[in-house]
Image (cartoon, rainbow, N blue to C red; front, side):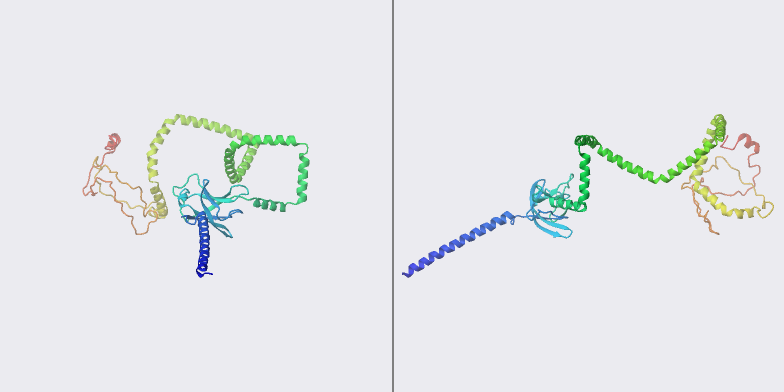
Length: 399
């Protein structure tokens, strides 16, 4: 055989093998690329973590993530823990802007037996900012599966004794035997009543809340109320036993009211005038009530000393009297006082006085500005005469 032909044949077979191998490689690469594109390997995503008390039976990786019914991502990982599960969500960043920062999360299912998906719940008042990537959200609810219902039902049936349940159902069947029409009519009327009561349920709830508050108040005043009832019982019994004395009391009260009424009617104007005149005095006493208390409390401990000074140890009053030169009499209007002090009463050192100490002198604007100068001259007949005061009055007052 010609050697050149053999080499050409081998080269042709090797080329076909290499071409077939390249074709297989291209097919594998295309398939891998399609799978990666389908899984979103080349898609930019934002990660959001979700904590759930449980995930349910049919929540698996690649489950859908939705908001307002629109798919925005998928579940990439489910980390089961003792206290629940943590879900890793990969969401389209552009679609994540549709989810407010205060959105909640629940795990739902499309049908009773369908696969579950993660749903973002938008509140009635959504936040103005969107949910940020890397945030962690707590699940508020997970759809209940049939296995959970069966488990609860099994737990209930496990606690119920079959013979007692059979006896109860037998008694119930015997009681309802022949009364189907009446029982149906009862259900119809109950439904009608409930439909009529349904609009008033908020009002009923409010009334029940107020009733609870009232009953709490009654529970707090039960003892005083019972004591009042006991006292009223004793009082009524006393009135029933002494009707004559009660009549005398009522007659005396009527007579007293007649007498007091007559006195008040005759002195109505004078009483009103007296009260009007007392008002300025009582107002001043009220303003200086602190000072009055200080004076009374301060004079109390000094009363024994005052008794000794005024002859409390002798059968009389011990006094040391002498005559002084007459001072210059009051001159109107030069000696009118100036009332311009403010700040209220001061009681420093009155009640808690320390021996050998003096209270602080309070400088006030209560004079015309001229300092007090004692008189150094003898004054004769300087004071107003008695008849002058009686018939002419004090200068500037009754003139």
